[in-house]
Image (tube, rainbow, N blue to C red; front, top):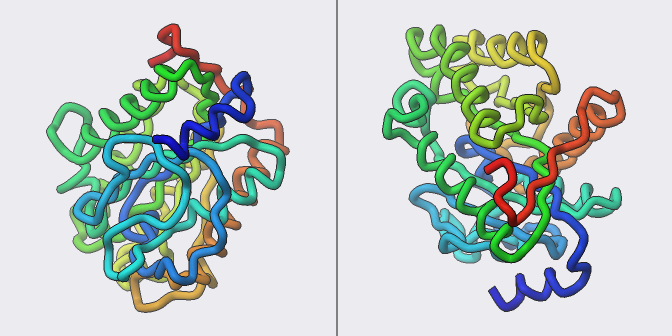
Length: 268
């Protein structure tokens, strides 16, 4: 925490703008070889990639994550996203929680069902509390969900994806007490399972169309290393698209000012 503590000392009164990134392998960046990672901005970072390493239950400084398939680790779209945010004048903090090869139906499940969603929510609230314990103000600015390919593996899970995703998004907003939390949904439209069962991508688009403060993030045209995963270049481009999508939401005036949380208890 020593290096992270240095970030506190620079501007102690400035709030962090918290951006949450969650989902499966392309949210993680499972093919994001760390040797090709862009230079990371100096911002707070909390991560857990189930089975692939984590930040030890503490905030650290944004950069490649340990574990995975590469000797020096991996990175995902959070790097270029955070860099673009910082260059635009923001003071971001990133919380990242991923679980490759997982479906909403079988793995994440619903609130209180003992699935990955429950673990995500516990760690998210813990991460926020850690910042609050350091007397930091927080603006919860976005939740990005990049997932759905595994639910497209079978007809029944693809058909039920819409309902499961609505429940997950509603629960995240509820635990943060942010009914208008900006949400960005994304999926690999060219994944073989998704092309076979497009109900999953249509579900994301339908939820966005019917909801406030949401946007859809396309992965069409991004460079892929195989049928399922983005290359390091594709991950960088994905993060840049994520920033552009976030910027379009804010510039459109569709997002109310984020709630400011403080160490006195706040919304969590």
